[in-house]
Length: 160
Image 1: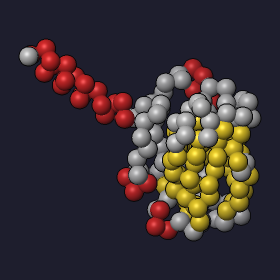
Image 2 (image 1 turned 90 degrees about the horizontal axis):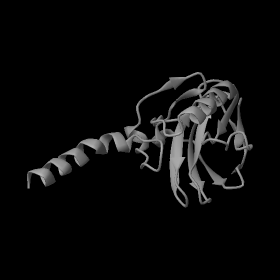
Image 3 (image 1 turned 45 degrees about the vertical axis):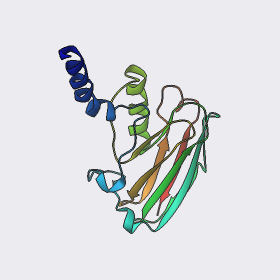
Image 4 (image 1 turned 180 degrees about the vertical axis):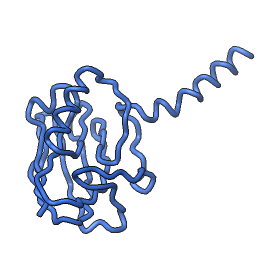
């Protein structure tokens, strides 16, 4: 009985860590996301979204659409669907940030992180990112799973 209780307690203790894994972990609701400020915007409030953009990811290593436009100050709800058979993700950022993160992912493919500008989406699943674009400029989104970004799984967002 003690061994069973100990095993159960260890399993429960491991659950919070597993929930943060880079893999197929469930995505937190937008309201539960921490407020994050970046050079390309900040965590958005879903109640203030001015539009919803549906983005499809596929095993052809492409996003559809792969170019988007927004106005400075806009809060956009991205509904990200993975129509493929492998894990994909959509990560917003500058090109330098995406390239740096892609390199890090090659070295640590199981790296744990869950930021409000990322959606990790298992095959056949859908997730959301709610983001406010606070600065004008050219920003990007990419799948940083090892090899995907390099295969061309990247898109561009122009904020005017």
